[in-house]
Length: 457
Ligand SMILES: *Cc1c(COP(=O)(O)O)cnc(C)c1O
Image 1 (cartoon, protein in one colour):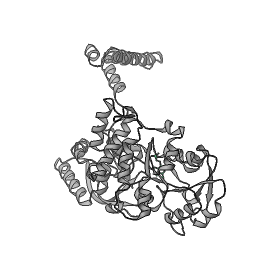
Image 2 (cartoon, rainbow, N blue to C red):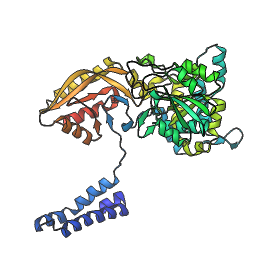
Image 3 (cartoon, rainbow, N blue to C red):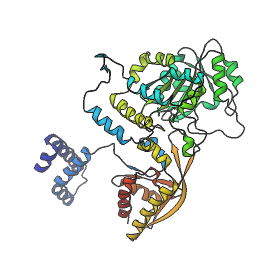
């Protein structure tokens, strides 16, 4: 006990002793122990205290190996941060900073300036000489809130409180975790005006729904589903024309909001932030920890006069983010400005080719095979990784999978054993098989993964 107290402190050890004794008393009171097991329990008290202590002092939130191949897995914390972002968080968090302090004047500053500058660069970095483009470029500003759900809430409340917002019935999305467009709409105190049908909405539907209570046209990205078959949806350009003609702002909830052209990684039909702003959308909202690959945040980019209305809403104060988010976001954006896309793990994983994955797969398989395990069998398979996180619902990236099978364990049991390892490994369970997709495993984790496989025998 003395050694434990020295290591972990008196109060934590005392607490564990109390828990262990209370449990033992309870068991005695319930007559669950005969004399022999009581002796055993008393003899093992110090071990029990140590175990209890370890359990109570262990972290609940722990890093793990994502072997699912789902790059933006909401349950697994979405985007891992870039190393440069981590460094920046460490430096900024452990010291005072100019979060809301203007170093030039010595006066109070605004926290949003720290990233607005970089978003400004990134969202206008194309040297297009189109005067319309030049006009909209000059006036784009960006603010940051807690997440995209907060961004949508703030935007709807600021731009449409007490009025109507027109949305297509094919875009009344539920993202999961209770983000549903109709619910967010009512919380924002705006009235949802549905138009069209589930599968077909025409521009005329929007046009004829506009009345003097209309405040906003809203387009919502179908992040996690597709509508196929007999379908119709007006193009963004048609919505822009209508919004301008009727003098209404047009907002788009992009969900993921890529800052790179996804066509470069073989994903088509996913609009980026720049595409939407260039098309003339007035305000776009998107997440910081989806395709952007940064910290959890909700970004609102658009016409400066509209964004200023959001900023002056008292909800903005309630939804604002802390210095750590700004630090991580600024560092991530700087990587984009420097076009150092490989610094951002999400972008690196997106760009990983099947060949690169295959060569790592082969290495792992040969190492595990050389250990001549009795019960674990490995097999190689062609497969597909998905982006996840409400981005590109139908886009798949070709990959090479390792299928695991075990002579004594079912796929479920095998999966549970992987989850119980240190660090936990979360694999894919498909058609009764455990599959490992290295796309989302960091190459530095390959060695630990091999050890884990060895331990499965
Ligand atoms: C993911 C998503 C959201 C929610 O974003 P969070 O950052 O998780 O709050 C909202 N709308 C769409 C379309 C999304 O894809």
